[in-house]
Image: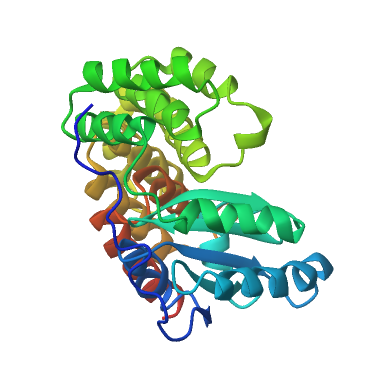
Length: 308
């Protein structure tokens, strides 16, 4: 394996930094969580005032994070006041805790855990290891290969990782995405179906499921893209045609055009089909990842429409 580290060595360098625990909102989530996680891990506690288990877990989390002496940071996000991020992360029950590293969610759990397990969770994030494990190095290599379009290499490495750690959620999700990119939809579905129950809600698995759903939708719509465009020329308010065209474009790799179509649909009739345009955009964002430049720009455009 290459010696290039997966994670920067700054995790423990910020000991003694101020405010290891703070409240965040949708507006500053990118800066306080995604961007900040490139410096050291950030734990996000998704909670609500009415949630009893949240009140049990919150103080335990804060205590353990403060005891870590700056190795990790923690933020709290009230999902009642900030539902958009929770929807994007597909959070279905709280308390839900996600850990972000290098701009993406890497670990998490749901429910109120005892302090001993919370401490183990925090120690895994900021435990001060000298360098990445062989599996982490392999994951980094596979992801780099996938991003460069070398799907065969990426798939082979993800497969090797799964031979060693059959339940590794990043490798399962990575292999599924490679299969989707190669058009092997059935194999991708089978790969995700083999994910153990304990990692079924992992952020990477959820994102890969969204990518699979979009690929399946796109496969049905792509053959009729010409007809869909013709329908829109005849009637710009044919919302169903615009929605299906956006899905087909996304499946064809024309992500920006797909996002433009959904934003246009949302602007014309945000309530159409129970806000289908917004829900599909959130699925796009999840499939692309929270730090993708298109995700960031499209989220800002969607927010401006939502609050205009």
